[in-house]
Amino acid sequence: MSNESGEIQRLRRTIEQLSDRMIRSKEQEERTLTEFSDELVTLQRLLAKNNNSLEAARQQAVDAGDSKIAFIAGISHDFRTPLNGILGMAEMLKLSPLSEEQENSVSVIQDAAKLLLKLIQDLLDLSKLEAGQMRLELGEVDLQETINYIVRLLEPQVRKNGNQLSIDCDPRISTLLEGDSTRITQILINLIQNANKFTSEGTVRIRVTLMKDDEITQMIRLEVEDTGIGISEEDQKQLFQPYVQTERGRSSEYGGTGLGLSICKSLVTLMEGQIGVDSQEGEGSTFWFELTLGKKDDNQSVASAQQHQGQDMDDEAPSVSVLLADDNVINRQLVMLQLKKLGITQVDAVVNGEEAISAFLSKKYSLILMDYMMPVMDGLEATRKIRSIEMDEMRHPTPIIAMTGNVMQGEKDKCMEVGMNDFIGKPFTLEILSKMIEKWQQSSEPTEVLNMSIVHEIAELNTDGDRTLLGMLLDMYRTDTPGKIEALRRHIVSGDHVAATEVAHDLKSGSLSLGIRYLSTLFAQIEQFAKEGQSRKAEPLLDALLPAYQAACESLQRVSKD
Image (cartoon, rainbow, N blue to C red; front, side):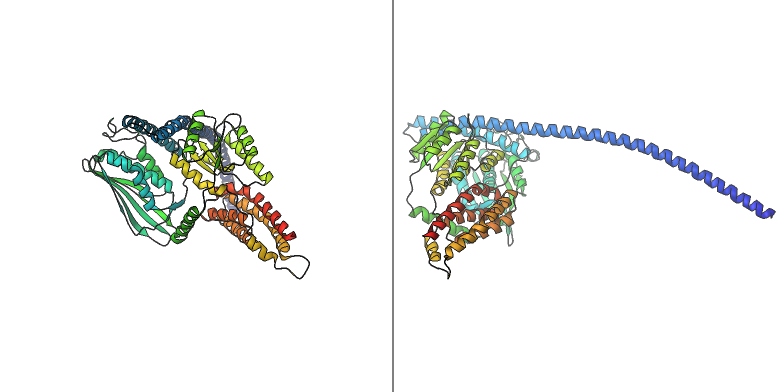
């Protein structure tokens, strides 16, 4: 028993020792956990404080960026308004009989104003790129036509420097591609002007090469080669950065801001391409960029263009009446002179949005040129009210073109959101104004509500009952169409291109089958925009759908009764 008792005692002591260790370990764990919790709470407080500081700093940066954008937008508008007067009046003056000395003086005025405009545009583009507000506008790209346009534009400058301009375009490149034609043109113009500036009595060559070709895309390399002064290796390392110029480029002989190449690089990057330069000092330079562009259906686009040309040749040009709303007296005088030069004499001019609405209510106009910023009522509010009046009275929408010196994308978006049809930035030339009017002149003429030949065919097909087939189809159309129009509106506003394409196509087909002409053309335009992934461009058409639908139903109802 003594041995068993001793063994039990030893076991008891061992258990007591283990329990004591466990208790001390537990106490140590609790102390450690308490200390950790205190440190965690401290860290959480510090983290919350840092988060608040970071959020405040982020908001401060956002506010500073917004203030910068607003400031530059305002400055741009303030500069562009007088520049519009200078360039426009100089252009009109140059079209009048002048002596050689007077013509040279006008040319100097134009060159100086264009240089100032280029500097303003560079600053504005840089600000938009830094703020992430630069957006691509995808559409058809005809590289051959783009280059031909650039050559026509720049060849006089190139010859003035004693240079020759040549083109080498790869014939394997598709006639029509998909991309941002405006930005590609901007990059090429910048590179060609740079090449010409640093070259004298030499050659500037544009070379366009097909790098890769597959079923849906082509990779294109565009080069601008010159025989000018070249660029040292040290200077090449600094190119494509804002405000950076080569040592020789900084001299007064060449001038410039050092923004052009930086903007080119940002635009190429935005288009997911690459840009670079190959050069040796004294032996010329080759600036290049590579882009991957989508392929388009050449035959369909060409046929559409030929059809449009045929219409232009066959139709007589209708008389055009214009309502001009602009508070700046110089701009009003200039635009009226430009319109007169284009043969448009039916022009009414007003100085604010309220007067524009009064004029709109008293007379029918082919086109409205609406300044963005005006006293009493600005162009945006005036456009909203005009569109509301058109909807209430079921009028055919009058094309409204915004005119402003603020050419930032955000301002363009505001114009389109209120129902304006297009945008023209100040300053604008006679050619730009002419193309804008030509673009919208045809659309201003009311389109036939119904295709009566189709309607009469349906009307003659009577059913066995008392009701006509046309009346039955009209009831079905009235039941389905409003809901589909609302669905189409939702898809367009939300940017659901696929769903918008399907609904617009369905509405177009249903309308065509009933002989509803004008409304079906609206659906067709919206369908095309949605197919191209450009639903935003279809938004101004949405407000015209309901009035056009109501007009079609009323016309069909009258025919059905008859």
